[in-house]
Length: 184
Image 1 (cartoon, rainbow, N blue to C red):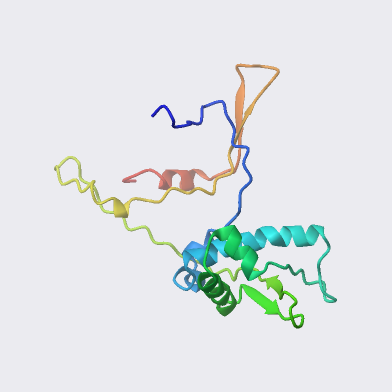
Image 2: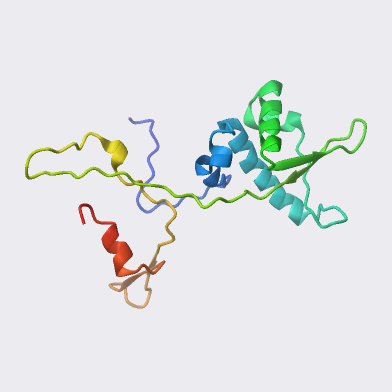
């Protein structure tokens, strides 16, 4: 364990990240249609899209495009030509990208589409755990509620009063908070 470089409590993460929309993993339009390489590629394309916006790369209709050759994708993601071609095709098949040919030996212009949102209803099947009678099925963890990683709470320490701390974030109704408790 001596070679393992742990993060410490007082350290912050100063890395750059690629953002991959969570909806690609839960929306039925994408969940089973796109493989992991396609979802990762979409995140890379979104990153490149922000660069295109900064460089003012858009067509006569104001649609932003980017240039990201298959070879660049192969090198960046360490994938074969066949795998990259499949990833582009999958994204094109679900209308997340559109490729426009420019002409002989010129790279294609890639237009990235917004995700088609669906109202996704996630049902949480929970078993009634009866600890009093000893009928606990605690090992059946597939029925526990998932952790919501989409919280926007921030911890702010008041510099004027070091003993004073406050949390800022979303406001939730008491009914919603009570629904989070087990066996309510």
